[in-house]
Length: 430
Image (cartoon, helix red, strand yellow):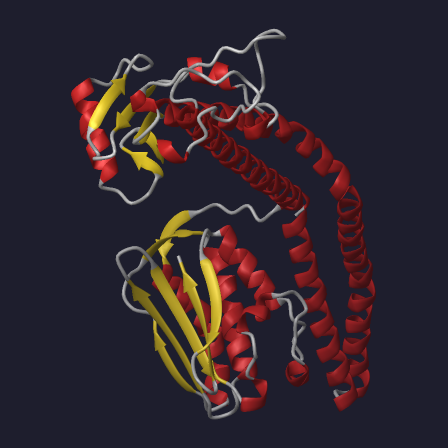
């Protein structure tokens, strides 16, 4: 149990780390993409206003920063490292001049075709193929561009009227974004792997109080069980002696019944304690489950008949399963004892074995009084769980817990459900 608790802690912690790294990487990459795309759009706007020129500034170190587009926007560096085409159109929409000096991937015919496609679009700025485009009316632009304090450039007639169209190649944007993504994912994977060791070490420290508490509980159950065995044996022996000399009475019968019940309780507690400490290690071998089902039902046939129960017992033909035969007989005995205990006199018990292509299924159902139907059948497998209305039946609430542990040790499944208003059904699948 301690190991399972530690594994759950590690799994939960690493899941939290995974979510954190995923959100972080996603946020960084989305922000990187948005910033990069925004800088390209700013460059496109600047190229339109500068008429596609790389303007040379006087003074300083020659690396003026454009305040209009952001404090860290170096316009000339971005111009020189970008591929773009500048196309001028006259007022009639005809191409008057094409500047392809800053791009090598685009031919003049292809540029002209792209320009015609852009003119058919309503948006002044957008994307066509692997190019971002922007067009502006030259007559509405300030002739000095975005820098009113610099010397006015010499503009030709084509640069003073009509429309300017700039095509900026952004094919490298996808490649750079993907490279950034791969690098960030690789870094995140390394960080995730590095986190495993400290999380494992931390898990031991975090669960230590719980582990110590669980160990003390196991030791208490084991010690108490062994200590109670002796007085129970003495009480049983004294009861036998009392009946030998004075005869059986209702008081001696009550004493005997309660000592038997208490002995069974302690035996089940010790069994569950051993399962928790060492795990239930079983030798799994092929056997006839149908025959084991018959053997498990045999001790309950007469009590069921005495209580006038309607029994439908269908163990089927030979059904070979792989598991521990003795432990599964014990599991079925727990289910049958539970069925007889809670089925009212004259009620119905059904046991049948079914086979499909993958599993062998044993279904055991029985009728219950309306006030004894569990609201949540899955909770019946919890240790010491008993609804108040079922306490009068005298169970201790750990039999089905043991049955579930046996099923899991045999790599099988055991479940419960309400199959009707007064019918509960247990399903064993192996």
